[in-house]
Length: 439
Image (cartoon, rainbow, N blue to C red; front, top):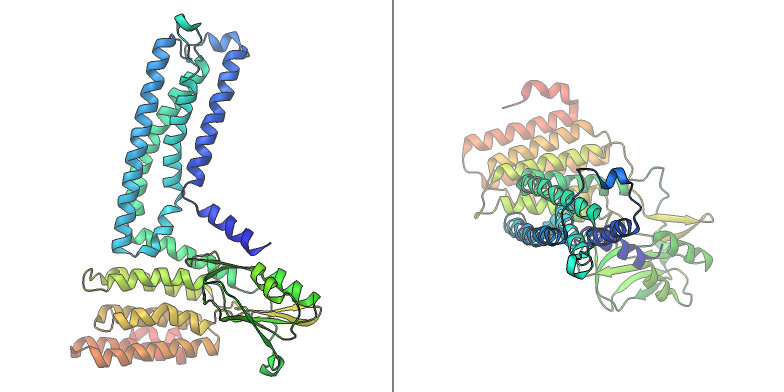
């Protein structure tokens, strides 16, 4: 699928107004459908004589529909105001990049859509009501459904208040972002053994492909670009991956054997945007969670418990990666290298997770202790030697920062015991370190 089409589908799926707009359209269509049933006389006599149907006249119908329309649009404004207040709180406390997680929340979209859809429905039915002077027509079925929709809106308002109270809770936000990390990593993980990247000599006579666009790489049609390269008996190596910024006039890729229209092929296979956040960008999802921790550690907020909650979720994400292969970024076509894409390595992933938190928590013994506990839990799960070495490097960095910045000897001793337990766990396994656990 073309990268631009993927970008459009992704933007449409995350659009705040997609669900409300669809519900408004559904309300209008429902009104026309029920009015058609009322006018056509397709309702059974038993149904029309039922006490459950609205049995008032045209004047009462207009009053009722006017009340439903005015109240629903008023409450819709209140819902929108509450949403804006929640967005402001999220931007101030947890970072502006988390606003996307609020605007794509289906609960908020459904609530707003329920009120706007009911408002649209009431207006469409109201325009068809006729009093005695105008030639009487009272759509009894449509009015009854309008009353039911009004009760649905009442229930939706109760749901919305509870939903927003839960939604702005920092632990809920952390859990939602950690779910994004899990989904992005699951999409990144390779299922089978990956081909090795070609040697540097393979690109000895490569030619640069320059792009005059600017922006973040949001979508990449890897399969389409690989097929194009294979068809033209060449190979392309991208110099950027999803989430990287493309600078105008800078090389975006190299091609082993120059062929016509290579620049056009790369442009068609890539879609740029003004911000990060495309589906499958695991590094961006991690940075969102790290931003919550870094803001929590700032002097203005000073909330180490939030930072520790973030560390727990990051450790869980690394444990989920145990035994999984990360892609090499090499795509083969007809037994030959067709495309090489930069990929997120385990070392780079761990660096993104822990470097900024460690640097900002240098004066917080509680956070440094939790960071070492998380690293210990991950190294107890991980069996890959290279990955364990990456975790060891981060544990040593924590200990080095603690010795430099922690002045209290008792706190420093606690951190030292956690670091020693990490090393024992790495060397001998978790059972050997159980007795040394400090509380």
